Length: 194
Length: 194
DNA sequence: TATTTTGATGTGTTATTGCAGATCAATGGT
DNA sequence: ACCATTGATCTGCAATAACACATCAAAATA
Image 1 (cartoon, each protein chain N blue to C red):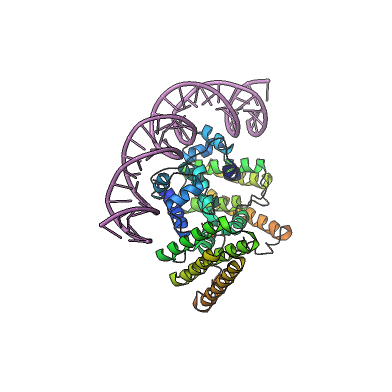
Image 2: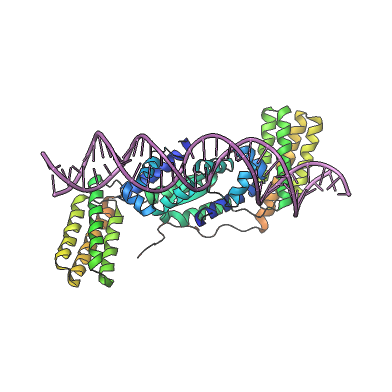
């Protein structure tokens, strides 16, 4: 469609992929037909604000009006937060599979132990940088080991296991990763006219 | 309409009023019927993204998708930039009148001198905080003085005059205004879970 | 290789926007 | 008192988003 919406469409698609969701999965979350999502991502429709908003919500995003003056700052912030740190397709699939398994498990297991496990999983999948399929497969196997027994003890062991993996990742990241955003990276007052 | 769009509508209205534009003026700028703008501001329609976008553009705003994580930071920034610093109705009218006069003048006058004057006027009307009707009336009188003569010299005098007024305002603001955002006012990583 | 999943595309129907143009009460300006 | 402007509201009409399905080729998975 118009140039103005092009970026929004791209952002939606990027956000969905960053979350490792298929169009159909997203369509379920946002209660919108898959066909429609496809059209939207291809910028083939001029959709309604409510639709855009609900899809954005499903992707943990918010639709906002930001003053031109604040644009550079806002863009910088969203970039630094959303920055999709190159999680390859295989990792995404692995993450998706793990999520499924946990969801399936949720019907049987419950309680503080399980919630703890869920948190650990959320933690490790949120690291994103340094996430590679091997690690994720370990995570998956760990969870599979619960599925058979289902005991509280197994849940705890898995949680601890995953925490350990997460720490390994964090350590790896700390050693040879981008040290830190060196500059503030945004400022107000873009000096828009003399 | 839906709760989600309510804030957008409110922001549009606020932005328009902050610019001292009437619905009809905005409708001209955005090529959208006034009746439609009224409905939009009252959140009575679920409008298309292109419409929202074009109106936002006319108001110097941009439609953006921002990740939940970045929301607090972004809101803080946009607030600090857009912060409608209580320009009362009378001042708004005064500003509008000044703009009209300048537009009218633009048909006769032109050149670097006139552009300079225009910039001065933009500057002073953009200060917004500390703008009171008295000052604005002085500005208007100054411009009126050009209208009669129309000489280049008069234009220059007016520009200088307005610059002086602007400096007074800036000084006033610096002395007993909010000193500075004392805290960063925003941070990333809203610690949204565990 | 066989199966499943994914994203893109098509069809028909319904609901609603968006536009045009007019009206109106309230407010403000002269 | 008179006139202009503002914002809200109504009409009809055309365009099209949104939906529910269905289908399909390509890619991923088994």
